[in-house]
Image 1: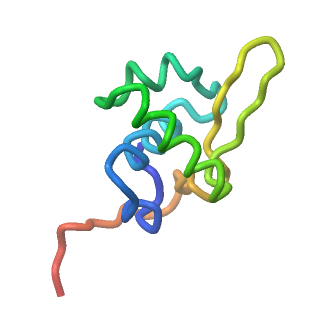
Image 2: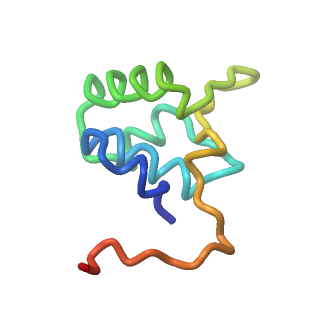
Image 3: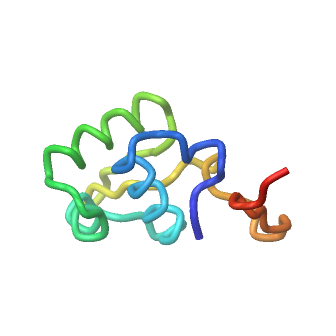
Length: 89
């Protein structure tokens, strides 16, 4: 599953992070898991995570381990009809 279309106009690394987080939804991901899921160096991942957190698109919890979760508004409704972004008018 991918993040909602309104969040797909961000830089590629941020979109890839959001997509990975949406796929793991309730589980969240560690920074290491995100680094493995996204084709970018650690500096780009950290910068993107910082930007996403500043825009309140992710939440970070640090209980036992630091885990990152997508904000609910980023996760598409699974019951909503699929939107074909390649369709034209």
